[in-house]
Length: 264
Image 1 (cartoon, helix red, strand yellow):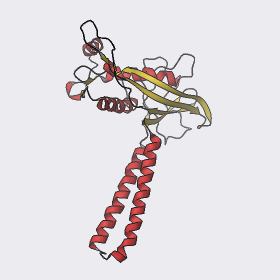
Image 2 (cartoon, helix red, strand yellow; image 1 turned 45 degrees about the vertical axis):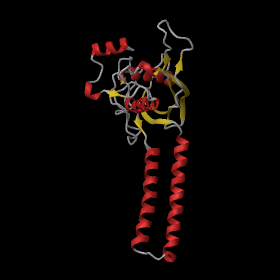
Image 3 (cartoon, one colour; image 1 turned 90 degrees about the vertical axis):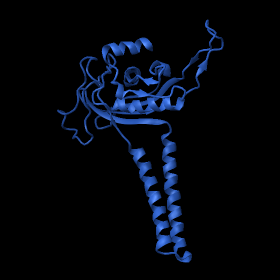
Image 4 (cartoon, one colour; image 1 turned 135 degrees about the vertical axis):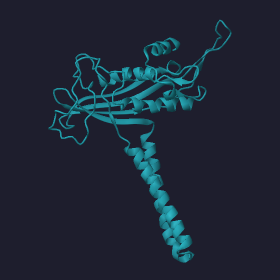
């Protein structure tokens, strides 16, 4: 880790001091949250430094500089990013979908407005219980239903941290959909026997992702590739320093290299 960081410092790949991320090394939840947040940031970045080359022999579907808006007409191929000719071209970003997050926020906001509005109405306008009890009961039912839908959606999403799409041009228009889930981390492993210096070293937990990837053409009618992979990026100590600094360049390289297997 130290040698990789030194190499990044020498090449200038580390971000400036004010942009660096520091976390508490002893807090596993904070370490995981930092990695989870970085996944979407890397995959939606316009031009990350790392690149992802298509597997040899497979139809290349990535490697252009920008994604295509979903509103672009399928007949207009001139604006679509093209497949790369070599691995030096930048990784084409995905367009993230926040539908489920926005849905849960909207449901929670609506439920709160209904309850607060009904409470204010019953307190200031219609104070008689015999007249306001039924509207209050309806408000409670609406709140319970909306909260239930919100909870059910969160449960169905599980550990999903990223949902995204992008369109590519490789002899035909291809649409890629990527869903990434981040399962709970395993416990750190402490060596059973002490080392030569008498200390028992602890290995940080391995950070892994569950990747669900599909690539389709012909308006989604032809399935070109479908893959469900478990990608292990390495243990936390490989991109977190002893001071708690998150070295995103190393994490990004591991992430894109792991996704290459699923993309095919």
